[in-house]
Amino acid sequence: MVPFNIVEELTVKKPWKISRAALNALTLDYCRLRIDNSWTAKIPTWKAQRIIERLGYGRQFTVRYEFTVDLNSLNREIWLVLESPDKFKIRLTASKSPISLNTAGGSIPALNVSQSKDLLKMD
Image (cartoon, rainbow, N blue to C red):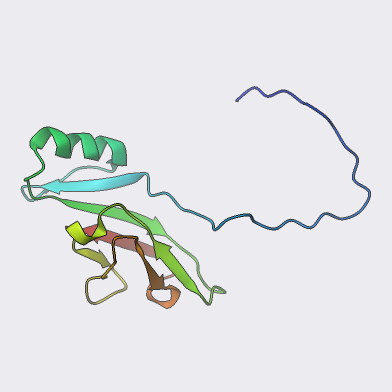
């Protein structure tokens, strides 16, 4: 457990209203990496990056991110944000064709994401 210091305690007599200050983010910390038709086990993304760097940037590779979502009541877009998306072919299992993103990332209609396990694949 991380230690913390109590600075001040307050008693609140009325109900609080809480609102988020920014959009929620889900960081995809683990992935599977394929090099030469062989997949790794699930590894931390930083470790996959080190493997790719060690092998050289000209090497072909595929990265798979697996995640579970439940978007039953969400009727809006979700965003995929990544560095240099123009360098990759990006697929989501729910989507039949590659996702096209500009250099700032892009939106994916929430209806394209399933309520069960999804897969984000980058070649």
